[in-house]
Image 1 (cartoon, rainbow, N blue to C red):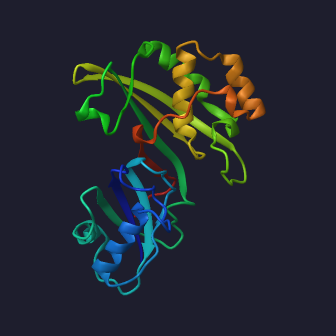
Image 2 (cartoon, one colour):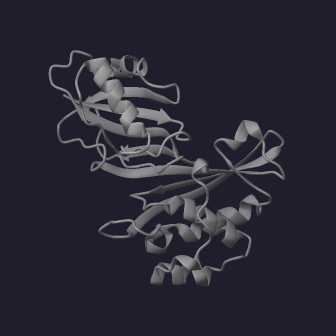
Length: 253
């Protein structure tokens, strides 16, 4: 049977999803829990990598397990006993062999969180990035539309990334604002068919620059055309980024 899991994790203390030789990863901790719970050493495949320090509310992953007697819906409780408190399996179901958490994914949504404050606020700072000031919500929403569509996002990708193509489709960039702990909290939701290394973090930096008139629409169009990273805003810190949801074309169970 192919077991599919939705997991949530605080990425602060991890070097990302993928196993690494000299650093602790979420994949390593999850595979260790699978081995302890099921007495089987199994490989767990995720919908995609998250980078060091990046969080997840709805990461999807799968593994194959023959002769396992635990029902898929009971797998969260089975595994959570062996996981650290900053990683939790929140749902489990069975899928046919054709389902692949990575290759079957059609849309992903990330959220980048910011708060506007002159000083760091401990109760929010772990998952949001502090900025001194920000444009109005209306301006941010207007400029966000420039980041949507099908483009070559090479300029938004960190150097050294090995991918076949840097063309991606961004279906929506949605900006929301609320108030918490006496400050503005800005959340930027980005939904696309796939993302490059550091792409959403760079999009956030570019959006702030566009909305603050530090960058122009012309320079953004030139970045799309040339792939020149220096035409864009800075890459924002990892801690503000969370993988919210992974969507699939067909029912997963």
